[in-house]
Image 1 (cartoon, rainbow, N blue to C red):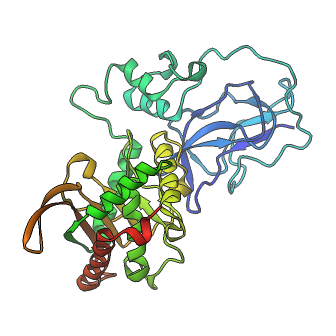
Image 2: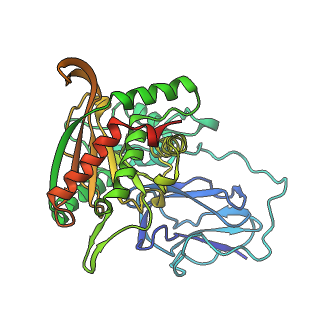
Image 3: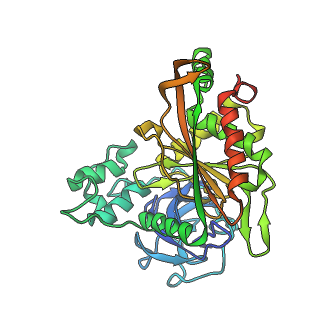
Length: 390
């Protein structure tokens, strides 16, 4: 019996997705749990796994990269034998909550039967997206990845461009989504930004001690995420969300971190920050950043945040106006940590200093409570030892 492979629902409000390409060729032997195709959602490209073992069959009218497909649409089949007949043209078979299809009744795992290598090596979802944006066929590009897999940089090198043609830079669906969310932020919030310059000498020394002790070294963003969580526990309105029914406070403090990727800005979320020590937080942050830059974040990885931290200090930026990430209420911008002259007592001495910029939704929080949050955060930065030691 041919088991249909369908477009899964990867988010509670997802109605359709963009097909990014097959990860296997027609007739390939597949195992249960093996990625079969890639699907682009609002801000992530996910590799969708199959639930059945057998052989992949892709019908002649199967989807092409870039096709928009409704949840539940059948795009291919898993069969027990290659001579098994396929159903008629692909059609919606009903909603799929999270998988591809129900387990096949009586499907057998592939035997030692082998097929010839596909005519073309596989490609990554990012490579196919880049090829589509640049208007080239990725199948003509030599791959530098494992087993000849075509990667994004191979596509861009093959196109002889860093992402643009002439004077026109194409707008990807990813870029369009980012733009839409930025406009939504301005339309749906009443943003106000407060800034303060803080003595970060003890924060720098704490991180230097972490370096000396070995293990996972927290970044300054990691440290600020931890200290922001401390301030949020004392000023919970800054983690609230404006709703028609009232201001909703979260059950737990999940904090997003802004990550710059080749495709654009992503904001993966670190869960339950107050329960993590700084090294656990750093490990979770590092994993999310690596997955973001490899294009392997899931939609769930970017949902549920109640606050965001974005750091432009590495680019030499002292202060900036960060944009709220809806439906959150506030975002913290972190500037360059640099040694500058400061007055300590009656003396002028060099101290490490950083400018913090807090943008908040004035519908949820007034200026004075927001200022008190920033004051609490500043005090934690100046004396971080109780929260970031270790």
